[in-house]
Length: 102
Image (cartoon, rainbow, N blue to C red; front, side):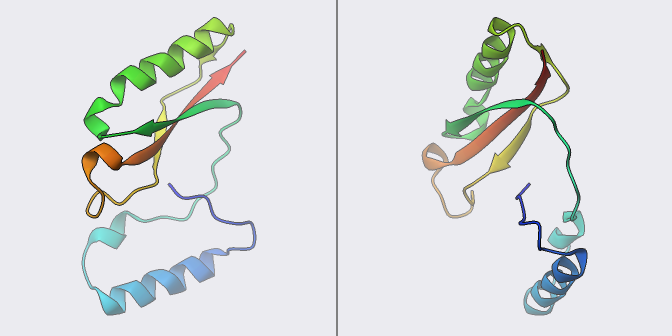
């Protein structure tokens, strides 16, 4: 998930996808979509390190929410800031977001 500025349109995204397909055909882009996401209140943290080591940080995030009197409002999601093909696992940066209600 990558947030886009408000001025980006679905047509611009379609054009960008078409341009990438011309340069590098493949099925990876089949999973790409442009969508609105109204998450509401959420807590987040920056996880540094491999994806396999995220669990303690997710638990920490849940504990902070509970400590503030909140209740989990669905599944957490992740925003990957690093390309795992180019960055060593111990250097990966991932934002972990957890929706919640008070």
